[in-house]
Every structure is written in C-alpha cells, then in structure tokens.
Image (cartoon, rainbow, N blue to C red; front, side):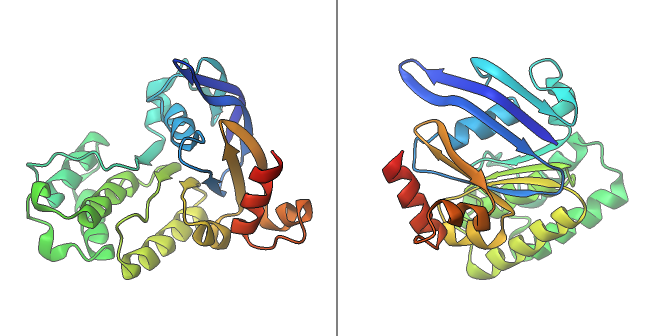
Length: 240
C-alpha cells in the first residue's frame, strides 16, 4: 500500500507538486495522466527516492520513504521515460547485471532473462551492444530491467513509447500477470485510451495539482456528458 500525504515539490520558481494526496492499494494498476509539466514524473521520482519532496510524506508498505529509502528501493521496479542503460553492455549483459544487483539465484536469473528477451522478441539482438539499439529496443530492455526482480511495486513512465504493437500487447499481458500476483503498478502515459482500458483508477494531474482520482465509472459522474477519458480530461482541465 502507498500513502502520499500533502506532497509538495518546487524547482526554483516552478511548483511541480502542490499538495498531492493519494492512497493506493496493493494489487491496483493506477493510471497517471496530465500534460507535460503537470508533475507526473516528479511524483514518480519522489516515490522512487530519486527526488526528495519539500514537504509531505510517502509511506510505502509501512516504510517511511524519507527515513527508509534503501528498504523501499528493494521493493520498487522503475522504468523512467528516458531509458537509463549502459551503452557498452549488450541487452543480455545489462539484464544479467540488474539481476545480480538483486542477488538473484543463477537458475532464476537465467529463466527471467530468457523470459523477457522472448517477451519482447529481443532474442536475436540480445548480444548486440545497447549503443547500437533503436529507441524501441532500449525501451524493451529498460522495461525488462524494471520487471526482472518481480517487484511488489512497479513504476513505469511512458512505457509504451517506441514499442511495436505486438510488444505493447505482450507488455499489457505482463502487467496483468503482475497485478494478479498482488503487485501495485503506477502507469504514467499520454496514451489515454490505454490508461482507460487497463487501469483500475486514474489520477489526473494539472499544474502540480490533483484534479481527480477515481475509477472511470466514478469519473464519468463528474461529467456524464464526457464519456471517454480524453473528453473527461479536457473537461477537468477546463474547469480547474
């Protein structure tokens, strides 16, 4: 479970987060939507410990993010919007390195590396240097690295950018398998149709503020004439 209370973060004169409150349950797939600069990535980075908030608290599975950062990091798998990889390792070597960081037993490590290389159809490129990968291939390795430890919390920022349609389908299936195991997932995306279809609840951010956080059924009650998430988002932003 994740509890976010009165979270604030500023960068010089820019208010990135302004009093965010969220309560997220285990096994939920939460969609996070908003325009560029709405605060989505900052919120995700606060959850991972990469950015420290100016004010407020984050409690993850009973652990205080400000005081128990190392314990929390072991619970989280994170794929940032821009893949952060070592260019002079191959995709297989990078996944092997990440698995070793999680102290994964050899047989388990081998099975999971093979699983993700197969999932994203990377078998033929597994031993090519990442420096020679396309954007989509880098994205596949980044997502694989985030999921390989089967974390209890998975955070993905614009995860389908650069993925081919088949990989998007397989990735969605993998997310569902994670949810079925009780994993909590935060899914930030500009592709509102995907968020609407796969997420249990949706958080709408605008200029650092949380405009709404609920199921699609409840969000539609806020503006019943605006049925799709895209239409609801535009309505919420307009009246904010």
